[in-house]
Image 1 (cartoon, rainbow, N blue to C red):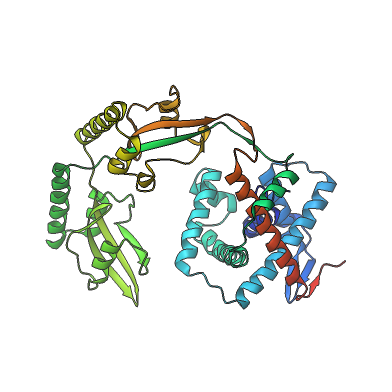
Image 2: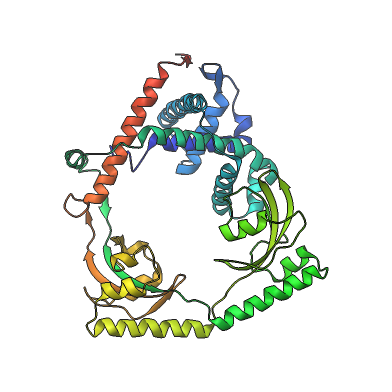
Length: 428
């Protein structure tokens, strides 16, 4: 079985961690009793029901059979028992996740939920709770999930496969291997659209005027809401942060301030800032800022397109694509490799890339085209038609699957060994 593709234990643990938030929807449908005991921790039948209902929602199964419900119950109960044991082991090994990291993960998960239901208001309506309460209740669940993931990583890091294990995995899973979509390998040269000196001067003048206004007595919050290019609408307030949370130049200036003081103009990769230190609690600081971004002009864009066209003409004229990519590409991850990109499914490419390569033959170079990253020219290196995964064309992918499968086996065996050291009662 290809566990990398469908990790049942991981999926069920995620379901368990989320199921508490569906509780209000099903609370009146279950007469509660104890489903299991793990050491001194109890698992209620209502919790099992919530987990089952969450799976039904995720799989869109409005009318499950009795057999399906029975199978899900065993899976959910097993996942709950595993969760209790793993959390106990994480505490025993003194694993720790700091609040800031948990908060970031919480915001990520909330964003996914909001996207799923449509809006923050709909999420509040769905759970029947204010957002503050939703966040507070989700915090512990997110922390537990991160602790379990940390524990898992400590046990599977360093587990790899030999070549013969990849071959064995391939032979054992021929019927389950997925069909690979059409793929292409490209090389690219990226030209970032950078602001001209005129744009830089204009942004610097704007932030300078803003600082003068603040020093003269203007309200920082009001001015931030009015002119700042930071998408936050809360007066530029960033809340409490720890050392290492902010970009270095911003952080250095912020930590040097006295409470209530205004910084000089600070430049970061995002543009020009002025910073106000609101409060300090030990090594944690609360700040707000006004950001004026360095925005390229239309003239900057046209000049970059012209530059890309000139480089393309040099390649067509016989100069080395690899050499020019190393010299001119602003893609730091691929420039040293001559702009070479990994083999990618055509359907996963951004629309502008698909359009650019649609009419190219192997070895041909596209006209300059624009994306969110800048202006590109790409060369089509090779095409791989749709095919069932095989050991000749897809070794790297098979190696990844085989490694994931072996790691799941190692982790599952370790979890089973842990159960011998715990009291587990399931009424059976």
